[in-house]
Picture (cartoon, rainbow, N blue to C red):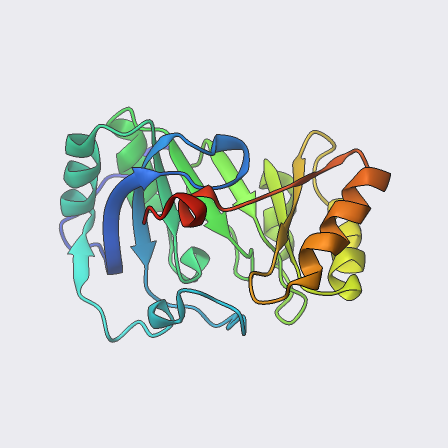
Length: 205
């Protein structure tokens, strides 16, 4: 399906920036990030709480966003948030694809799926359950771990995604014991991997 862009279609933008993908299967790859405003998941440990309100941010047109992404010439374009699926992502993603860009999504899946993506990183949260439309789309499952309960949640969610989904456990930075929990778990469950955020170690954005 081809979706035609319109100059009247806009998205609330917290920021755009060119960096590397700092985690997951595409770690280390040149990436142009589009951070959309708006989130109703409200993770207590979120490091992007400033992205939660929509009204605080300017609206950018699809044309402006796609031209900037193309000019940057990244390996991938990552749409993140906030919670991106609050918005209809079809107009933005289809225009990015029309320009020959590879488009990735980072989402909790808490809202109905929309958009045209090459790769989807799914990070579900137990306190705002995912919408069922996300599960068949997932390439990468990322569970943030702060306690044993999170490990149980992750195993439950892993049963719902495709068999070839790459499965990651990522420590919650403010909980020191989470690192040991993940280490011990992965040694016993070889189908899971440990995810680290290398941009924090390298002090990149």
